[in-house]
Length: 401
Image (tube, rainbow, N blue to C red; front, side, top):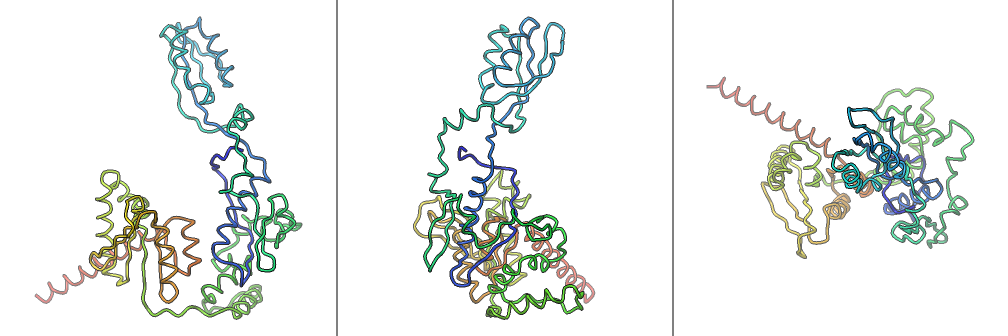
């Protein structure tokens, strides 16, 4: 409608399909953008606006004027409450209409009126047609956020308008599924029945094949499966044999850490960053030095410096940790994407970040993803084991003495 942000929407991926030759990781990312936009075009959008909760206290002789003003501003109010010589009105009104109303209250009450406002939230816009016309946003002309889709024919891509996508889709629309037990008809119930990660993959065999094509066959614990699962497991295993085996690693383990993402995800570092960002950065470096000494991995800590002028990125080493400050116009995400893609070909690579989009790209590169909060638990566990080793060593020395 206006190119404004959209909130409070839950999006569920219910099906997907790839081509072994023509599909690349970036295709899924682009398809996601276009699918969201196409879905918004098919749906009926509503423009929202911020709304105030207000309390207005005016002399009794001015209460009629106050009620008339609130109605004029498309607001609502409760019945006036008497408070001695004054009356109190409470209700809601659009922020855009009440912006300068405090001055009006002071004028017509001769300084005896009081207005207090607090943000209530967002509600349907009272004059949406006027606002939409004034902004003049044309979603079809927004080249940065296209609504159409790109399909492939004879090795070449071609654009399909948003309202014709249904005729070109390679998968049936889950919105038209005739049976309740089909995947996607009730995705929440389907996912609720899943107890393990294997169960989730089994919801869509093609996605399972894509996963195993990239990372190799999924190994399962050797236990006697229930009879109703034997056929499904067998079909997945046979499909996995068509694809390449797991990549062979040379034993080198790399850990890439998005520094600022971790700082703002860990509460104690976040509080420290509010007082001193440099202090939080040095505290994280010290923590990771301790962790690296215990885990013996090749740890690369990346900080955004893309706003700092300089054609070359800065790299320094602190206690066997490589600390990278990205060059101008290069974000930490960009550096991690390129580095993980390069290293994951022959090495075991883990990436620590809580950026959901970045996690999907990392997974496509063949690296393992770890959220910042999960990594915090891993660091704490390492610190506890280090303390236990030190305490055991001290006790042994004391006994020997």
